[in-house]
Length: 135
Length: 264
Image (cartoon, rainbow over all chains, first blue to last red; front, side):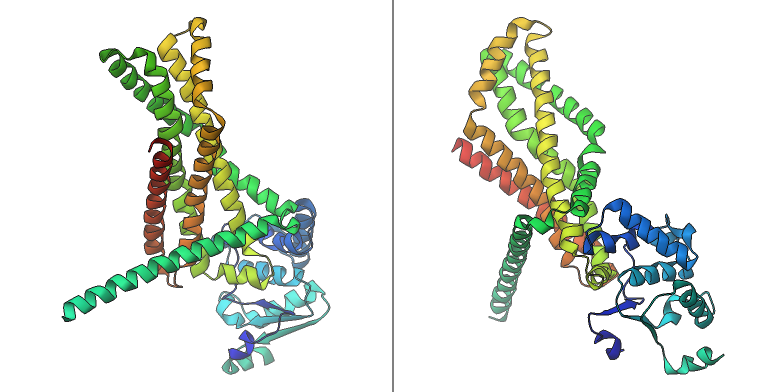
């Protein structure tokens, strides 16, 4: 996975080794980005974060904290956090390690349709999982 | 000979370890201090986290803390008054009460209270953040951990200890008055005169500086101890143990230096 570690700064990563802040809700984890990077107000940051969750079809997970989420909900929160970074490339690193409760290629495909974002999504996965994506 | 060499080697390793820890703490403090001077640090987000930290460290425990300060103050005042009466030193009772309680005991107990409640929590949380890669995740998202996680805790700790010690001191002054003069207003003039005599500028500045150092010790040391934690979950209790021992030694050292500066 050296290729993932060497990714440049303009890549937003969704990975098992980039967890959510455990004591923050899903909404606050996402709202941190506009709050600190773009210096938006807390209310505006929360509104943007909620809009991102709405867009992905997971509005209800906003108040949940990391330990209270299912793997799929946790993945969606991480994805929303990566999307709100607005970087040109999005890398999903070994999704099987995060999405062990759903058929993940179709799940990610569905989220990609809902997200309607510009830029590219790339999935880094083990070669023996290639067949899953061709199904 | 081998035993001697091993002992010297072990002692040397310990001394180097202490210097490394000390250097790490001061480097962290310097970084935090420099960041405080940057106008960009003072954005709404950091301010909100500072307010939240002060709420969790001071406001949330206020009723418990004031109850505890009330009991301790009442007990110490009663002991001082009865001892002063036994030795015929009643005229010094108010001054002794103020010096022992307001200047020494209450700030020290406040620091211990905040260290045990918030310092240990901060140490554990930072250690878990370090072990779970949460700090790396924040760095990946370009959310500065210093501004978002650490600086608000340091400011919150200093503000909380200074405020709580101040409130406990005011409560002790009131209790002292009631214990010495009761509900009689005739004692107001001599009592306030004693207070004014004790609390000159030097003593006030020293008291505030001591409380601020206590506040810094109970937050800075747990944060740096948490950051030193190796990325292994079983090391979290060890990190908290080390951090809290350092906090205890730092609090005692600050108190000893303050006493020495005042009375020697």
